[in-house]
Length: 227
Image 1: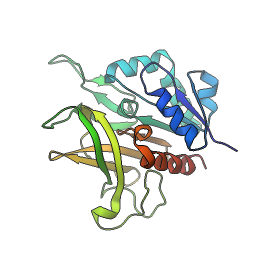
Image 2: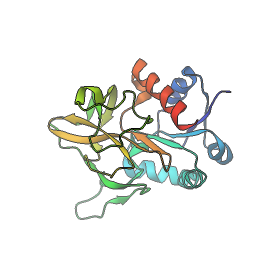
Image 3: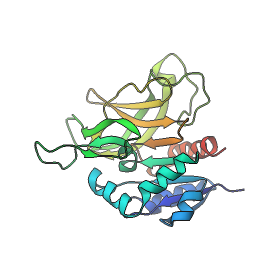
Image 4: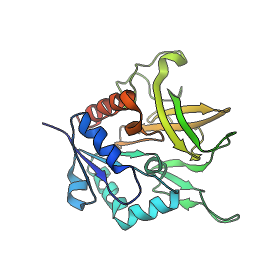
């Protein structure tokens, strides 16, 4: 039976590109913000394009924050892409005035989504994603296309497409969360995260725009987290 995937439609995401990608890998994908469908599908995908605060407000207006909370309480996975990944964190600083407090995110992961210290922003194009040395070992994990090894080359998840100016600096989340990083201009930021226990997953990169490698990634992700 095909896995049911809802691409949550709240006005801030590449919903058509996501739908095509999940259809191509054999899922029963649908673009909707219907509460019951979003709550009961095998995988809820939360894409995101735009500013942190705007996406968060749009998600809340569509009751997406409540749906995510209810799914996680029921042990059902969610997958955030780009800003849909960023809003899973504690807070963001995009478009705030000097002296203002950061905008509160959904708070499932500690960390601040801040402007990247790069020579050129946005960070746009193809880049490599590596599993962080602090990530979970000895597991056939989702968000891991290659088994862990002791050298960086074998921890390479692959090349994926990015377009963003904000991100979360590399940090240690302990032994229960898999973290993947990308390096650019001496800056190391989180490019993917996987919390198997809570079933929360996300990528800063766009797998739906990353060609064959993106499709391979999504196919394995769906197989691993909906089994």
